[in-house]
Amino acid sequence: MTWKKIAEKNTIAPNRGEEFDIDGKKIAVFNNDGYHALDALCVHQDTSIATGKLDGNILECPSHFWHYNIKTGELQDYLIGVKLQTYPVEERNDGIYIDL
Image 1 (cartoon, rainbow, N blue to C red):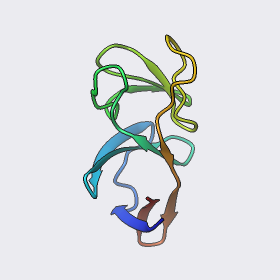
Image 2: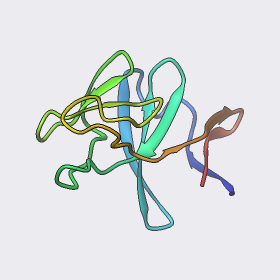
Image 3: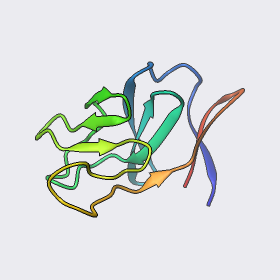
Image 4: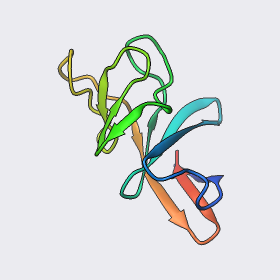
């Protein structure tokens, strides 16, 4: 795996997410008690989750209201055992990095 810089520090607002296209992969990064990264597409209909509403660690998909834990990627309702891939994220002196 390789660490890649995806953003400057303080560019993802607290309690918000932003989508990044990294090597052809869509990743959503959330700033909520630290940074958390997971696949950006909801398994329901491949809609971006990056603009969804956060309530603690739970993200609500903006399209059809499915709920994911941003720390684990686990779907919280509807289907058991469904999970989005998560990725390690680090805030460093010169920016925000993700390990892909």
